[in-house]
Image 1: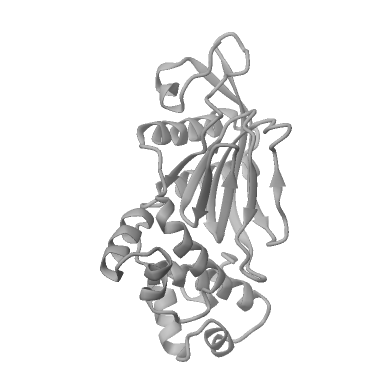
Image 2: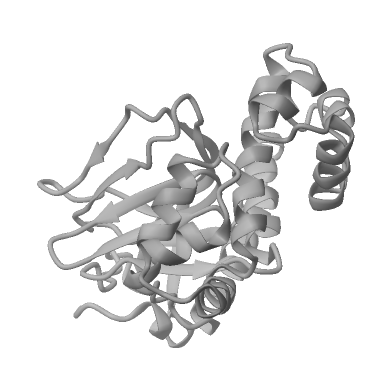
Amino acid sequence: MNKIKISDLQFVDFDVKGIKGSIANFPTNIETDYLNEGRQRFLIHLLTDGTRIYSTDKERLTVTSGMILFLPNGMKYHTKPVDLGEHLCKGLSVIFDMVDSDGKELLIDNDTIHAWQDHQDKYKELCVKILKCTLREPDNILKIKSLLLRLLTELTRENKVTPPQELIPAFECISSRFKENLPVKVYADKCHMSESYFRKRFTEYAGRSPIQYRNELRFAEARRLYSEGLSINEIACELGFFDAGYFSKLYKKANGHSLKSEMDKGMI
């Protein structure tokens, strides 16, 4: 069977097997190299915190929080997190096998990194359901399969994200200096754009403003610091918010919960 495009999955008779969901945490000093051997299984990965760089022989993709990747079996790539000090890259992963109607391994184009932006958290919702089901109902194969097929159906309907290379310097600057209250003009200058045009291009691509994106990185770091016993006042100061009340208000508005309630409910 020849290689098919991921968009062709909706027209192909195939099956998914060996489905496993997991939570992935990547320390900043850990890199993963599949350039020689390639992946052994299919992977769908949703980045929930941090920024990672994926590279092949042909392309380089900066993946930010809220993006989801489809990495086929056999794909050769290298990935590393953007250094955020002690900040972890986190994500939800679904690993599985795909076979055609004859039970043979399905061959999907593995020369291109497939990535989408999860603007409405619809992919995250399905990934969380798959994770919970594989942990709590591992014998319910039909339910697990149906959830993964729904996720694949949604992905095949979407257009692949083609991140504009001109924005990469801004993403890297924000990710490495997210604790600093830099004006948006600094990020725009990194990309050699006017501030107004940069704001427009960044929001079109990321689905949120540069400041909202920076705050998301801060909120992820806040969760880590809070779990280590720091107070809200200490966290706010550490992350560039000199008013703890303002920090708490922003956090709850963005996440729907306060830091304390997330800890109490085991969400951190």
